Image 1 (cartoon, rainbow, N blue to C red):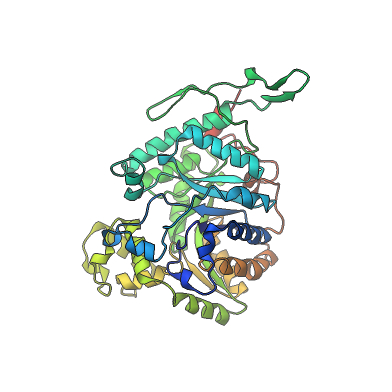
Image 2 (cartoon, rainbow, N blue to C red):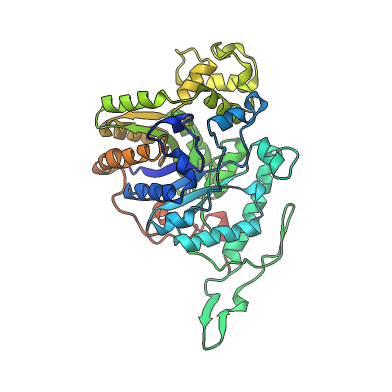
Length: 453
């Protein structure tokens, strides 16, 4: 077994751990500084991580109390910066670490977006990935030209055509030998080896050629995180990596099996799709030291901030509920779903809004694994075996302390057991997935159908 590792961050103060920016060791407020991102990338590369995954959101969290106030107080996804812009600097400061960035297909134009990603393909030397999202926040829609969010399935229909357009631009517009750079002939690009994509569809019309010459990867490594029926089908067709949020291995296993089945239905080798589950790891020299760290971090977790985040995730204003009243007495579809999730985790507990907020305060989105290097390695190995995931998105609740602890304490134990790499394979992000020499999408991937022939 090999466990793959990504670091998980967002260009903001509060992401998976809410309120921990107040911890005296936290450098989360430095998200605006290039040195913060460079330091992060160098830490992860020392740990031989596959990539840094930078999440993003295009709208503020404004469901809780019908206002952005709670989100602003705890810095939850607002303020936030553009995740694309620090990547060039991080790539210049590293040699092997990949970078996966979240960008919404709903609010980008495929022609311009294809150029952005090809530029990063060039500047990173083939170490760029794209986490494809369609964006669920009404606040994003209202601020980006729509009166309200598009219907869920309509966003995915639009995303399907978006993918067709960018595949044509990345794979089909320029031949491998289009750039000849012949000074004697006075020809830099051979015009006969470049062709317009002539796309005319429901959502997009793109008649011309791609603006950029192909990068190392051509198509960036593609990730996706949707777990709805439509999202799983989309991932089965397009994703090379799938990000999961699950609290139990059995929950993750259901998602893994579902997407692999969709990949088979799409004519792909299901082993081509790699799965990464979110995990927060608090590691110390001993179990007792790690537990003391967790207790210290928990003192800074914000109940109101966690409720504001979950209100946005569920599209339900949890401020209307009694924080200490069991949720089973509230009869709405969203609350029922919340109750089912947490009672699956621990049916012996009485789940109130406050109990849930406290539970997710340090590690919202996945398990919190606490202990010595041996304990952490045991649990990550158990999780991978039982869930079928290929690796983990390791969160950083007290940046950069928790990343540094993981790299300095947990990674050597994982390497000693042969569970994580000791050297990088190849130089590109796709080679981290599939091995040295595999830089292009595989032949059974839909992008391959658009290759210049």
